[in-house]
Length: 71
Image (cartoon, rainbow, N blue to C red; front, side):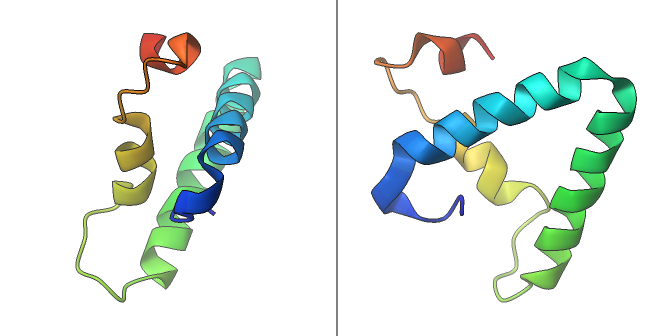
């Protein structure tokens, strides 16, 4: 999902919803960490560090999206 460049707004909206999910309870943060790690380990086609795809999207500087810039 995150690698799909065509639907960036959908990806960023999904990430915002994940932030709400993990802020709801600490256990949700652990679930997210486990899920991302498992997905990264399943996609070992390219030698990249864990969380690479997610961090790449979060590090984008989209001036139209003030909410994402605050995180």
